[in-house]
Structures are given as structure tokens and as C-alpha cells.
Image (tube, rainbow, N blue to C red; front, side, top):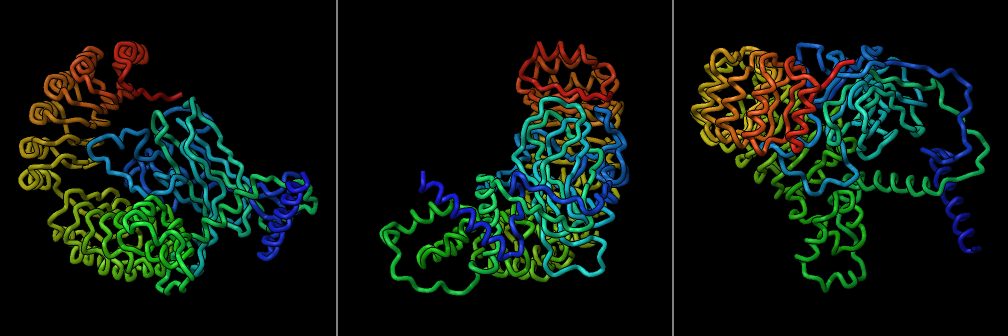
Length: 590
């Protein structure tokens, strides 16, 4: 008993001493149970002034319906529940996009603590020390998994050299059973800088349908809160949490420090590690994350050499560390990434942390073996970056440029030099396509083995382009024609698709009001491998044709009939009873 009390006393003193050296006496998330901030200044309540950045949204760039821009200002819908166009909606939900033909393999070294799939960044008028954050969720809540605050003001004329992102709250995704609206108010930790830039990160994998967000409210104090002097109780769990956070922060910074090019000082010996085969040590290390490699590299010379071996970086994802990667980190990684084949730099480099010149240098050194390159939301990219990629990455097969909205239209001409491309993502870019029918004709002529094609919100593709695709790309397994208003069922385009593409597993005809019973019957007769079908918004599909489809397509697992006027809740219940293995989606408005 005495030993346990002594250890407890020692840990408390150690924690006090460590905090004092930072000038932050007992300042952390839940450090002191009895501790309360002294309300010596007025708490401000602010709604988001504007949406600065986001990774995806359901809506169009030229509209306000279902877009992230709806998060700015006061609530439009809350406290009502349901599917409303005035809310912010991300592009995906559930696991449906992970089991379709276009799904990509996960990077194996992604840390288990990283759950984020999408994000949105919001700016507020005044910088404050946050005391509370409310997220108004109006439909299928539960997607938010992390909330962060930034030390830099987006309205400042001078961008500071050291931009800090601090996690206010984070938890793994959890299942919320009710789709009803709620005000989500997580318990946030106290930070030591004021902020007016808040970032929400979401994971929608456990949701039954699209989550909808209406507004975000930031509570905070202008002046830094003063802590109470009464510090009688200490949460032991908090001690462990704080030490874990500090260790993770340090480990990522090792990309710039301990993992630099400086040689490891010679040690006396490497213990029993000298007796293990080189390949066995490499295999063990292959299960470690990048921060773990950084920590392990500091233990002995032998393990330092193993941790720096380029074979450890064949597949490398830096996305989980987006807030800490900068030019220096890329420079120090160059010698270790000369054999990299899969590289994920999504979300990194914004607000000046990575320059286009540093990225180009990195690609020139490390890009020759690249097969897959993920650059989603890379706002530092410019035309010269794409030129370097096209000249260096001759083996590149997959290139993701989604939401790289700073690239000028002419920059995409360089992609034509990448002759081995099998996957190209240009979602939310400024690529200019005047005639989608011409593009469809070229794809049909040159890409006979094409398996997946996403034409979501292509405004001017017609039945002629669809006919070309159906005739030329007969191996298509996935086709997204959602929100393509120029396609009309009366031209026979959907029936031709069904007859020509028997391998279809996923077909989205979202918001096409002309889809009718004859189209559904053609799918039932010809596309028996169909697994996912979205006909949201059609008025001309009857329960009888849907029953034929469900009877014929035994592998069908997702059917979205939201806003289909002939398919009411009673029909959905009947079909659910007859086909229990099919998730039939029917959204509602209250």
C-alpha cells in the first residue's frame, strides 16, 4: 500500500514539474476534477462566418443544396429532423463505397487511432479560447470523430511560421441508433492559444444514410481563462492520456529531428537483435506506424538502420499526420522513399506548410517507382507539380487529385503523358470539359477494359455519349450517372446500358426523374450481378418493377428509393420483409 501511494505521489510531482517547465501548470483536457475556469471575462457565442475548406460534399459547386457552405451562419433547419437541401452533406456514407469495384486498398500502416474520412474547416469572426463547441446535426448524426483548433487566424495578414493544430476532442466512430436531429456537444479540452479556425473530421462508415449538419457554434473567452488554485483531485487516466499525446506529438516531429540524415551514434552493442535474420526484423518493423519507426530508430544503431531502410517505405501514408508534415519532413524522408510505390499525401501541405518546390524535389527523387499517388485536397499543387509528376512517375497507374481546386485548367494537359494510368480522380477540380459526349466516345474507343466510371454531376452528357460507352466499355462493373440532368429515359439510354453491360455491379441514377419501370425491368433481365442501385427522386418506378428486380438480382444489397413518389413507407416495409438481406433506403423530411 505504501509503495502504491509513493508511486502516485511521484507521478503527481513529475507531472507538476513537467507542466511547470512549459509554463502551463496543470493545464490539460481533464486534468483536475475540481478545477473550474474563473469566469472573469464574458463568454462569446459565435456561428461560423464562412467555410474555408472541405474534402467533399454531396452538392454541386454551383449550388447551395447539400453543400458544405450551408454550415456558415445560423441554423437553416435545426431542430427539425430529416433530409433537407439546406444542410451540409458529405459525399458518402456507410461502407458501400468500400465494397464496390472502385474501392481502393487501405494503406496498411495507417494508425488504428486515425478514423477520419472527410473534413470541413470553419472560420469564425473573433479568436477565443474555446469553452464549448456545439454541432447541430439534423439527420443521421454521429459522424464527427475529431474536432481541432488552429493557432493561426485565417484573417491575419501575416501567416505565422509555426502553425499549430490542437485536438480538442477525438473518439472512434460510434453507432447512433436514431436518425433524429440532435445538438452534439463533446467535452473539449482547454488549449493555451486563442482560435477562430475550427476543423471537424468525420467518419460516416457506421451511418445508415448520409449525415446532415446544419451549423456549428463556438463558445469561448477573449482572455485566457485563469485556473483555480484548488487542485485537490487528479484523474489517473488523464495522466496516461496526456503522456500518450505528448509522446505521439514528439514522435511525428522526429521526422524533422531524430529521423534526420545525421548518423546514429555508435552504441556498445545491439543485444540479441544481432542474432536475428535481417528479413525477420524487417517483417516485424513493417507492422509499425511512422511515429513508431521514429521512436524505435533512437534505440540502437542496428534498429536505426532498419528503420531507415527504403523497404520500410514501399507503402507510405502521411495523411494521418497532415498537421505536422512540412518541407523539412519531406526532405528528410527522401533517402528513405526512393523505392516507394504507394504514396498518400492527401490533406497535407495547406497554409504554406509544404511548398510546390519542396514537393517537386521530393517527387524527382522518389517518384520513379510510384504506382499509386493520392493527393486529395493538396492545395499547394500547381502546374509545375503536375509537370514533374508526368515527367518522373512513368509507372504511375493511379492518381487522385480530388478537391485540388487550386490547379489551373491548363495544368491537366500534363496528365496525358501518363500512359499507364488506370485510375484518375478529378472530383472538384477545375478541369474544363465542354463536350462530355466527345470524352465518352474517346473513352469507349481507347479504354476497352474500363471497369469503373464516375460521371457524377456531368451536366451535358447525352444519350449519344452513353450509347458510345455502353458499346465500347462492355466490361464496366460500376457506373455513376447521378445528377446528370440531360439523360432522359425516353431516348432508351438506360435500357441500352442494361443490355450492353451485363457485368454491372453498381449503378447510380440519382435524381433522374425520368427513370421508369421499363428501365428497372431491363436491369432485372440483364444485370443479374447488380449489387447497388440508386434511383433516388424518380416518380415513375412502381413497387411491382422493384419486386421483379429484387427477385432477379440475388446479390443486390443496396437500393435507394428516397423521394420516389410511388414507393411509400408501407411498400418499403413489405419489400424489407420479403428481401431482408437488402438495405432499402428511404429518407424523410419532418
